[in-house]
Every structure is written in structure tokens, then in C-alpha cells.
Image (tube, rainbow, N blue to C red; front, top):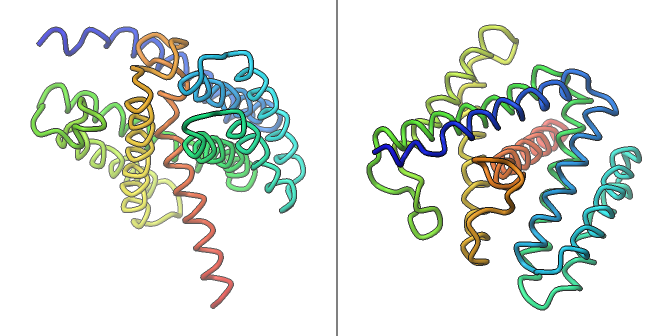
Length: 260
């Protein structure tokens, strides 16, 4: 039983540090939050490259190019600027002999999610971005403790052998609680509870998708940058899934609203 908790201390300390840095960036907003998102995005691109290819130098160049392209797309705020996000996935995929589609899809998703986070902060302010990240964080915390304390059947053993149904459902419950609290102090209404649970599931699917890539590549973590967590890609895979869902949800909402 004790072995189930061996990684608890480094996970907690790393999580506290990341939460402080992330919260500071969100609250300050503007260029500070943009730089934080661009940095995290660039590192995730580098980590994905090194998972697929053993030449880190090209990965660093791609990460630098990703930072430049994403910064330009954020500043441009036009369709052309957004379409430039396809540049790095195309260049990187062209340099690979294997997993080209994997690299292209994930890098494109990473950059779109980074673009989305910045625009959520610009358009919706601090509270809604904090809600999104809190849903992801609480889902992870509830899933971690419930999974280790309750155990039980695995959620998707072929891809992520540590994740259990008890942890997955506990994550949904935790997300619903976050949504309930926000419904009390904002004008979102009780519908935010259901949306929180769906965002929680989307984050879990982001985690599962990244786990699938790691299993294909035969690696345990995307890197060893964060004690107890692996790399930034390991830590922000759920944010990736949640953000992409919210972008899709927002697009559909405005498309339907415009049609009506």
C-alpha cells in the first residue's frame, strides 16, 4: 500500500509551485500570461519531438519556431494568423520518418489550445479561466486519491494501466462541485455543473490520448523536468483536452446563436 503514495510528496510540491506560477500569470494577464502560455507550449512541442525522435537539437529549433508562430498568431487575431499555426506541425512532420501524423495532430492541438487559453483570458477575464483550470486540477486530485484509496476496475488498462473507474468518476464529482460553487457566485447558472463534468471528461481524454502516445513510443514520461509529474506535456495534457473542448463548445455556441 505504501508504494501507492511514494510519489505524493514530489507531486504535491511540484503542483503547489505550478499552481502559484499559473495563478500569478492568469491574474496578471496581458503579456505575462501570453509569455507563460507560449513557454509551456514550446516546451510541450520539444517534449513531443524528443519522445518520437532522439535528436533534441531539431526539437529545440521547432520549439523556438512554435513560440514565434504562436506569439504572432496571438498578436495577429485574424484568420491568417490562426492558420499560421499549421506551419510548425508541417515542418516537424516533414523531418520525421515515423509518427508523422501523431506529431502533426498533437502539435497542432497544443498550439490551438495555447491560442485558446490566451483568448479565453482576453475575452472572458480571470474567473472563467480559473474555473477551467480548477476543473482540471480538482479532477486530477480527486482521481489520484480515489484511485489509490479505492482502486477497482481499470478505466482503460491497455493505454493507461494506473487509471481506475473510481478515480475517473471521483474526478467528475469533483468537477461538479467546482461547477456548483461557481454557480453560486457567478451568473453561469446550474448548467455550469454539467459543463464542468463534460470538461472534466475532456481533460481525462486529453490525458488518455497523451498516455497512448507514450505507450507507442515506449516511454514513461514526456521528460523529467517536473519532479513527480514527468514533463510539462504530462502535466498539461488534461488542460489540452479541456481547452480544445471549450474552444469547440464556444464555436458551436456562437455558430448556433448566429444561425438563430
